[in-house]
Image (cartoon, rainbow over all chains, first blue to last red; front, top):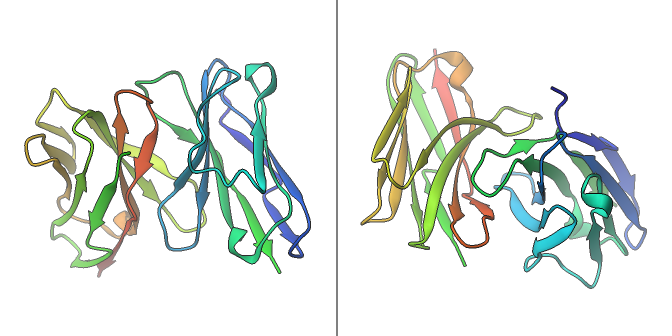
Length: 113
Length: 112
């Protein structure tokens, strides 16, 4: 079974530029999460999808972050414009439903200069 | 919303000794408590989990205990080995929104 795929693995941008991350969850997984992990901290939930609907986006900074999950499969997370404090690893995770294990991708490491 | 606190932030134990990491949660509706291990530069991976209808669960050298009344749960690793060195995260899932909230992590180092 293929795991959660994420790209790009690394991205370096200047502040005020934009960036997009892509995630392909495990086939059949209805739930998809985006987490932000700043160095030395635990993953912080940004947004949770159930199929193509948003379940929770209360921690997503909506003035600069956006996310979508078209057709209930792949998802993209966009940051525009980026700030220095957005430097982090962005982890995508998927799960079969509300009660199961989360499977994480390798993450996308963002450095904002 | 749910808040998960984890301690200690760093832990160093002698190889062969036991390690204990503790977490507390705030939402009494939470019903699922996973523990993830994250090695340097790698993805978090589930090592053990427990549901609210169970007080203890064991898998070889690792065990998790849950005290629903006190709203805390702990990870126990016995006979620690060098490969146990990593960052460990506890987490809690609430029953309503099904979102999983993570603790801040514990960096475990095993001394030879």
